[in-house]
Amino acid sequence: MKIVTWNINGIRATKKSFKEILEKTNADVLCLQETKITRDQLESEIAIIDGYNSYFSFSEVRSGYSGVAVYCKDIYTPISAQAGLSNLYESKSGKGAVGCYGKLTTIFTQDRLKDLDREGRTLITQFELRSSKNETCKLTLINVYCPRADPEKEERKIFKLDFYKALEERAKALIESGSFVCIVGDINTSHKEIDHCDPNDPIVFYDNPCRVWLDSFLYKNGDYKDIAAEVSDTRNQILGLFVDSFRYFYPNKQNMFTCWCTTSRARETNYGTRIDYIFCDTKLVPRLKSCEILTEVYGSDHCPVEADVEAEVVGAKICPVLCSCYMPEFAGRQRKISHFVQKMQTVPSKTSTSETSLTKKRLLNESRPVGNLKNVKKRKTGQSTLTSFIKNKEVNSTKNNKVEEKVVPAMHKSDVKPSNTNSKVGKPSDSKASQFWKSVLKGPEPPPLCAGHSEPSVLRTVKKDGPNLGQKFYCCGRPDGHSSNPEARCQFFVWVKNKK
Image (tube, rainbow, N blue to C red; front, side, top):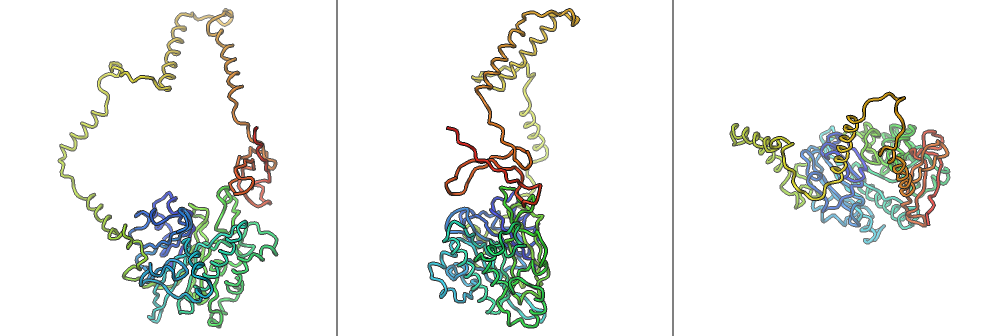
């Protein structure tokens, strides 16, 4: 079972058709984050794709914000699907809700749970697996887009930690129910220094509350040297702890990031962070075959992460109620429209061959100009366009030059004497006019050269809220990168002075 997670940074911003993206990833289950789409913006080209069933969780806070989605191949249809971490949206999922909420209602108030789910950050799908002994079990996939902690907004820091706590409680409750659990998505926290391109002081780095939580959430703080033996021997004792799948296979691999700043072109210098993960509970680790970061895939400021899990999925015969195919605007459309279009394309035309050829000839004749272009009368269309005016001037100038060539006989250079011709009289005035307009219509001043590379700097504008919002400045035009990288951006920075 191939699972792919990708923060797509706007599902409608993709240049290729979404079916083409699905086929290219070749994922059995594709989990997307930051879809930035609301229910009323969802179109059939995204929601209804032959061979797949899709599920969406939308932000109720504002448009173009957050949102997650899951696409499953039809042979991997889940037995249940649900939006949100709490049970507040269980009624919308109908009988197909996943259940198992643990102590969420005792840890958080109903209002807080509603806040955590209103931004459309969670989608849970559950699959039925068949074991080698022909027994069935469940695999629960939690697709999350965790909040970003704005350093200047204390309430968002608390919100992020509450989201982590709710995620952990729901995951543990699902494990205790006997299900395998896999958490995928944008966790929005780089775990260790190796997962960050330029970490700050180690004490400050690891004191971050989000990393403290991640340490407690992962098995042995992410140290997987002897986990294979420990899982097989003491599996029940480490129930509820999760494994970072990528670090399980590559514990010391450096410069492996999943997110880069696009405005500073940081991907060119691989100046990024690893914040997209696939977490497997320790019972699922023996089934984990591989996990790779697909850095060669572009289309977002993130790249996908792929994991291969050894699991024989028994696809459900009927999609869960949350499936997009049951939405009123799409209900009954799946496959029927495509079949109708295909039939229309294959129906032979009733028009005879002779009629078709006559039509083609008529259209061809209508597209040709009638008679000689020189004899076509010009229509009075009022004021001429600027383009035609320039062309007419060029034609007249050419004609005048030809006349002058006929009148003036050929002479040797030594025989030519200076004279006050009209052409020479006009040159000084043209020069003065040119100088005048240059003095009046001054272009923008050239940007200053950066100190590190002596190259033209680029003009930027402060977009962050604060006293400098809207202020312009010059900085090095190279991509952002580590200070030790000579190809990266230097420290050049100059504010643009406001002209009074």
